[in-house]
Image 1 (tube, helix red, strand yellow):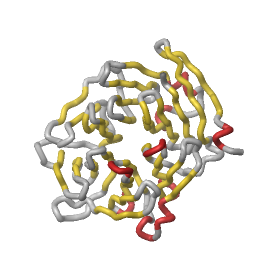
Image 2 (tube, rainbow, N blue to C red):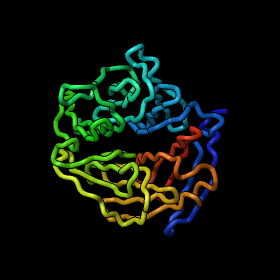
Image 3 (cartoon, one colour):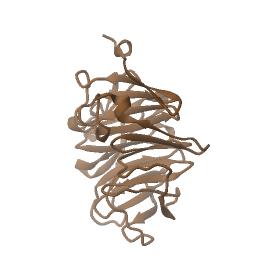
Image 4 (tube, rainbow, N blue to C red):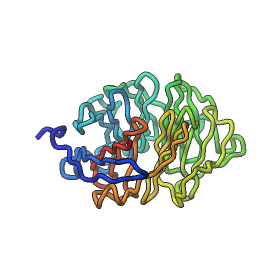
Length: 288
């Protein structure tokens, strides 16, 4: 059966006077994914997913159909435990190929274009773990060996760094990294309880004091005008126009998934995808 015809509406819940709708795009039974680690949206709502258990990157359309995969790109496109994915200027797609300690660049059709070894000082090759990119051509990379965020320009030259002694700023292990033109570079501590932000040039950093009571933020997704933070139970939305509201995930999901297992990707201020890392199920959230 066509997946587009089998979208299942499983929950409608009233939150702050609005109605949020959850749709199932892929169930755990019909998913082509195994242990996915990351999701990013590209042009025409194409979803790029690090299908970690299958050692590949896949492109899905909004119905959940696989349209392209990285394994079609030949030996240079073969990945090993891909950890994260980012979509940048002109549809460039980047993958943190953690198992091969490199970043691989693909076209939006997942054709292999090149690769980058993270070694800003010319010493040992470091392990990239988290990625984000922007429309200006910047690529932000968190590498876990020395604990730093590196900004590369569109030619893969190191433009600035934060952490590992740069600017006397320490970057502990992080759980999520994203970029917003309104809010800058944003990340969440892996074992902490804080959300941080920096400007695009990584010249300053501060702990964000958001208007939400998250004790242990888990996931982060950012657009140009809004960002979203989740913990085990709640998803918060903050926008530059002053919108601040939340969704009760337990009420919305109704047992379909656990908040701890979800990765969120916002494609508009009112439209998100939620990917279950444990089962490979994919949901769409319409949040007016």
